[in-house]
Image (cartoon, rainbow over all chains, first blue to last red; front, side, top):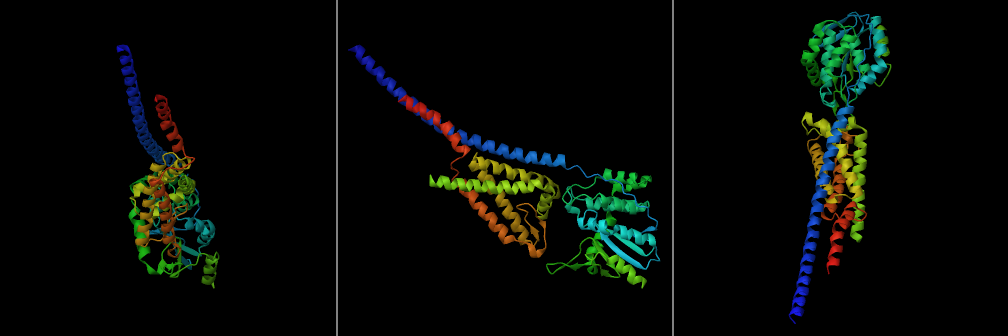
Length: 268
Length: 164
């Protein structure tokens, strides 16, 4: 009897234990569900963080500055400085144009590519005088920002030592793309050396940013001058680069014969 | 179950949005930089890193949603990003900037006659609805989450049956 009672009790005990452990397993299952959610959320955060960090590192590694190779121009004409304006060509030339350029501006690059040979020819022939206004209109369009100002100021430093035509041509021949990295200060200095500049004043001028105020001064003056504005398709008037002004009027550069026409009508 | 299938379409749809927009941005980092800079909200030093990271952030969210791993947190990240985009486009419109959002590549300053702020906002708000659906109801079929749920919860369920 006693044995049977004991066995019965033991059986009941085992049954309760079984139920208890089943409950324990049940709640453990719920707990592991929560844990799965937490682990998943952390994994998602890690994946997103890895994407962000990876993206920044990749961008950093690929954005080497473009090479700045020397492009020599044998300028057989005088180049002087009128404040911050670089004046190329003879005083006796019948045609004088004002050119407003930014070294980052793609349209300026296209303009130089198409017309620089003709301009060079006319300068050499003594029929044309060009007043170059170097501006930093697109300072925020390089990554990091500020290439327009660096390049413009370095070009004026080159003008100070009589190397503007080659320096100007080189910067446009190796133009960095908008939204990309511009030439570094080291490259801007080295370009001068490659073009044969030996004056150490040039290095100091480029590195100290001595001519930066002149460049931004040119931009302010150009922005403030209503005669430099042209009509935008939205109805407003705006100043953009490149802008070429001939006898007080903004030249329509879409007409590729604009320079020939100007020289011909001045000769007539 | 029908709603799970509908949720799957929402998930794959939103994944496609992120993969396409992230892919187009990653393919043209210079344009992406110009697009981010055109919003004119970030300090100069932040434009570069944000433009570099954004395409890959979008791609990562897209991949997570596509395979269905961590759908709810990925959907929350989508909501955060889309709200930031809506705020960015909204402030550009309010301030009278003339830019293209560059949401799917391109971007940067455009002619005032070519801005498309209402369309851009409507599109982003539509995407926001998709993301919100997945935040509220992340359960979908053909998802890595479902697979995980089955393996993690499935094993103890077997033990429970065995205990009886």
